[in-house]
Length: 134
Image (cartoon, rainbow, N blue to C red; front, side):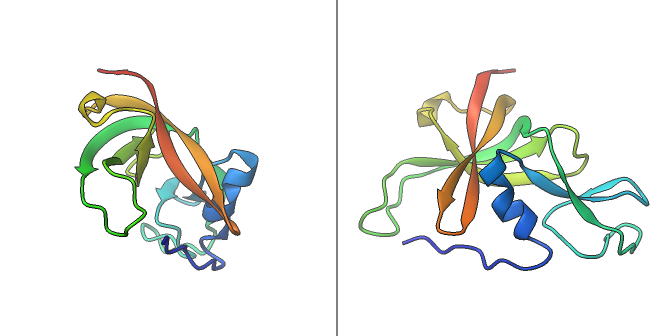
């Protein structure tokens, strides 16, 4: 069982950008702030001139956890959740699953890139390794 996000005016670009391979992060052109989670008003300068823009989709693992608890009967474990500092999006960290690595291969500093999984009307971001930890 997976709880999916409810689409709203501020988050639709983020949750549907994956259809085009795009990680969409909020941006305020008035103060050049990157904004995540998505907001309609810039939390830095209070501008309403906030719009999504495509991020590079790469970054560095800031932190991670390995989950061994099957929270539902059909949940495959273990799985890795990472917190990623996104390249080019100052102050933005994105939390998502890391796929394609064994738990003992993940490390802080690992370079990753975003990919997407379609589920109903949203595209869930996850990360894959770009190479070895730095």
